[in-house]
Image (cartoon, rainbow over all chains, first blue to last red; front, side, top):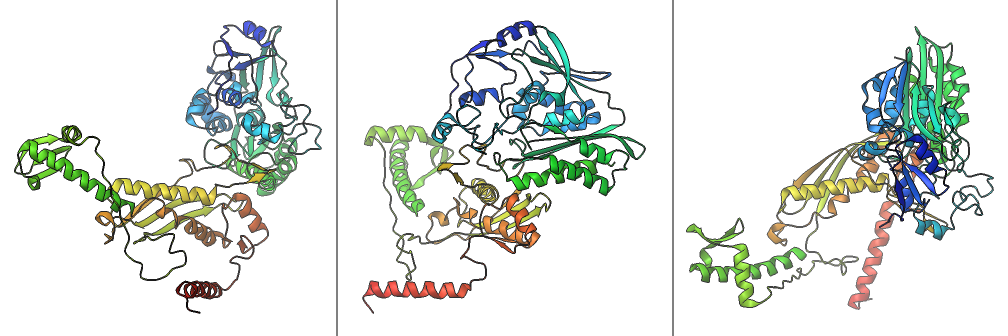
Length: 322
Length: 272
């Protein structure tokens, strides 16, 4: 049985307090903890202090000019929210296919946004990783075990809500000791398995804002081995805005096909001005296929996942025809 | 077979308890019945000794209660290859029908329904036995679609239950169990087994269903999406290890098996 290491647990009540605590390199933030605790049990990281964000970020979902979702909103709340299901379908669907009901009840949107990148060399027990000689993500002197000549870590972006949020044009509000700023979700990520988040020490994601949905329809499809539990091995989100039958705006985003989620602008370009005919969808799917860069570090094969990039894109776009 | 040994041991204990109850209730032992955790006078059921009290009284008299049972199967009618290893007097039989759908764009196999009929001899506890059959169907499905021992650089590539896939309730279809009771002459109360026997036909049934769906024979497990996509792309008729199946004449294999068995038998009986 794997046990947690000893740690201190802090429960700040303000963002400033939390940010100050998080300035310590041995501190880590925790919200639902559905990824933090298992990783601590496997000794993938061993923070001295866990800083709970439960009293710092809220989980409210409110609509006004668009929708505002507190970073503490659980995945269940998002999956079941009537307005999100109706007008921001990709996000509700993405939240609903994450893991299992129990973990969705605890897991938060903020946590999913900041989800650690994954690799089947990295997400294993200490016993196994020690026997294998570790990897670049935890030991800088070790090469990347997936591709030994790679200059960077190739761990995979694995959050389902992120491509949906990118396709929906969402922004995140980030607070730290100096104040807060708003960034497009897609700007948060880096194509690097170790430094995958463009957040500084002490930054906290407090909320996500979705622009007004009028005219937009969206969808998200996830590829994984089983019908529950598993992280994506490919994920595609698409959103289109139509005037009549014509597409006037579109966004397509992918995850689990590289170390960062990506917005595939070439796919959008293939769709704008079309009526989502088969040929247009095929061109968009081709663009996504080209942008997909799966490595051999998840379940499934590279060929299967690369192929899924095209298939899932075609299917999400076809579902948006009506 | 173990069931018969258990039955014998249990019968001995039952006799012990009935003797105790007969003495306490002042009723001849052959007039006693056992039900609802009581040993009672069948002529006057309200006159009873509870099971617990009977055990306590028996332990006071005899000390720790234990009994032994054993069972020897009857002599086999003939010589079979490997017969020394499995001298069972009876065998269970199972049949399975499976319905699947294959998504040719992703290679994913969806199992729509599995029906397993299992000749268990007698279902001593029908609900439990159905549960065993359903569990076997689930296990067979998991084996052929997901379970895979892969080693990479000397270590298991899938060392956790997140990596080593077993079906979830979302992957499991309706499972139907059909009990076939042939009341075997050698089995305890006619029972045979319902442990892992029902598992056996499920794996080939699913493989055959995949063949029916896409025309590709899979002679190895698991049948993964990647293998399906690869076979479809390369228009393979069969996926499996070399040297087995794939056009080899099955009657040739049978002739070789018969020849080996005869040779062993001749050696055993000293005939040459």
